[in-house]
Image: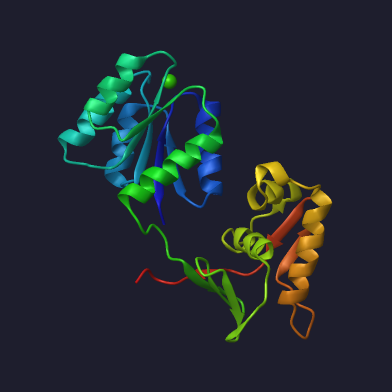
Length: 232
Ligand code: CA
């Protein structure tokens, strides 16, 4: 699994970043200063570090310098203050890979993280997996049950992919709308129910088992554990 270290001293922003990156399927360590950042990176090396430059004890420049000095080439996305252009220049010259200027949207941050990881680790997770009686091939948009391919629409596949890649986690209707529909074409949350109902019909076995649980008024959850195939 791809591991990300978040170094940000502002607790609410740190938590927001950690939550969103965890939601995206990364494992996340989050610390509030440079020294614990270097310790964390030594104990459990990250695949990418999100590094705030302004930190209370040991700032981001010194962290970056220390990393590169010990030959750690981990990709670094810097967080900089608005207008601090000299900071960005200094950070990039110290070997940071990219930067974001505060305040930024979480969507933009996630997009930058993915872009950096694509550049630096082309294959960051396996693309095929099994769960219950199903096998999934994400890039091919294929799901089979006991070898038989199920006939899903792309939207149904996307919904299923979101649920299956976060087993046990409940997704609200609004979350599913945001993740599975384009921003300019978002219908009402009821539409999610209609699509999930169709999806369940296609997944259902003879005993009526559909593997998608309705969680009260909240949303939906995939009920089975998932086994990712090894990267080949
Ligand atoms: Ca700061």
